[in-house]
Image 1 (cartoon, rainbow, N blue to C red):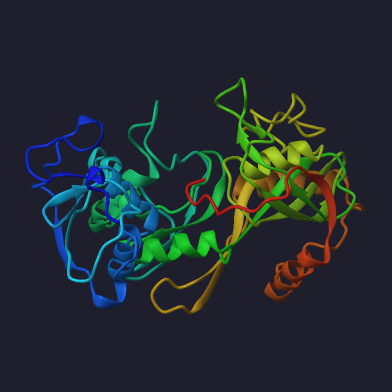
Image 2: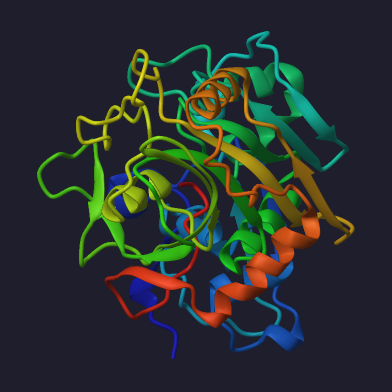
Length: 374
């Protein structure tokens, strides 16, 4: 039975939170419920009819009062509809893109077509505008490079890298491509590998399986907490140096600062990490490395439009390469011979995950969706 309390008058009455439900300036989409959708929830129907948008985005728009059914605003995504009912949706503009100005920032693009862009982010480049970084961000550069991204939420950015982490990132150029990539992330079909230089001698490959959430007292930091979201990081050893190891990490989930937090939990904080380095983030010789030694070296996904399997690789940037070479000179005999960039080796490594590499930490036993924004 339909609940009339879940509807409000479309004209003149306030929507949720006292906001007026007048979105006349925004693009409106008119739909009718098809027969095969009769009896389904409003968010389910919209997800079927508007596949370019994720269900979570549509649910948010419903709760904001942007959806009108039969002349009345509906605020409940679970509201069920009948065949033939009319739906009107006022799409929301992206406030982040609207508040950002295009800036001519050089972007190292490694691949681009009409629906997908892959770039090799340099260290020091902030991804999203925010406190203390309202200009000069990747988002500003994307809006200049491809102005149509102003019509895509977050200018097409579907996952982040920390300011001082370098490497490969994907950007969707259309809402349809963005939804497809987010769904791949949620299904853990996007492969992301990182090279990291960590403190100490990592003896063997392993997995850190520990939930990550906001630190209970230091709100700018993340931590392993029982109430956090499930997170799993696989790693393998590439080289040993004097009190340092070069490792490759692969993510099954994507949480804020995941590799940095997990390697700290494993007892091997990243060299140069100012937040999670534990005061021992310098290498044995020379000055401290000025950032966390972390680089996104491999990205593999299915093209959001064609479904074709695609993969890209990126060599570590000059500062990390210089540091690694200096460490090799100090420990010429420590090289393990495990550092191999062959794609088949990477795939075999991923297949071995199910065989259970050594678990360094296990802190949860429930599953969760990928957090694409982290």
